[in-house]
Image (cartoon, rainbow, N blue to C red; front, top):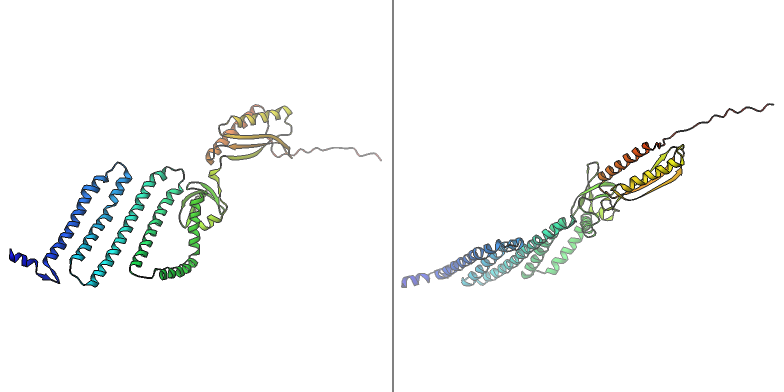
Length: 355
């Protein structure tokens, strides 16, 4: 027994065997605590009914394990007989480890918050927030790590003000070099805030016409009606006049129908009656105007303005076709002739006066 006690007192690199055994016990205790935390707490709540809560609990594995082992290492440093300079270094490492652990925890918290918001964002009509959420997630994480680095440098007794001043001067140079990129970034923010359009909307922008395919931090992609892909920098998008065709409540269609000059008064009235009846009865009609407008060179012109409720262009064309066929049918039934450019030449054979 005495020899065993003497064995515990044996010195090795300035520390007794008992100190090393105690350090091993601390590491073992940290490992057991981590295992218990995972098996008895996290695994128990990981399958919680609320999907987000389950993921939140599961995401704590990393930060809590890191914290437990960090505390264990701090205790070991206190147990071991090591030089003061090494202890001070260990303290600095401990502070850095705690700062990194807190940042790691906050980054996980951002992921949890985004995961909680995702189902609600998916339910909204706008698709812009679907793209904005991952961007905000990345920006939030970058901001957390920047603050963490600043805190670490401050604890290491670096002059943060000088560093920030240097970064400011360098930032000005970078900003001048990356002026267009910054303009595009703030253009993207403007698009996300003002929401002039969303993915899938057909827009007319910078002379291009087509649906929006994607909105990024640098550019907006438009698939033109010809099938080509146009990439417009967000800086230009923010400064341009945007015609969002998708947002129109109806499509206005204005045209003239001309009937021949030999059309009688009664048939002209019948033509007006047919046009008003066809437009009124069609399901696509929001409102309409039909008026005998003018005596043209070759025809009696009837002005027709139709506001169609179908804003999908193919549906609009289908509705227009149905009405045109019905008008053609009824005009033929009532023997009303459409006009086309013609000229009537009258020759007058006048006798010359006798001398």
